[in-house]
Length: 57
Image 1 (tube, helix red, strand yellow):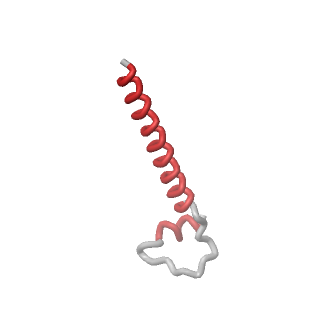
Image 2 (cartoon, helix red, strand yellow):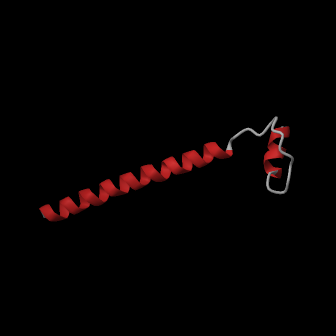
Image 3 (cartoon, one colour):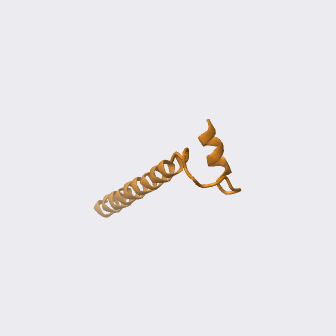
């Protein structure tokens, strides 16, 4: 029973580390996407149209 408890503990800790890493990656991506493009000198191309529309708001 000790071996099973030890394995469950290790698996649980690995899952916590994975969840925290994934949450940090999602948070960083969200912050990157929220970057304000208002006032930038870049023109509105096909790739940046959604950012240009947000900047006009």
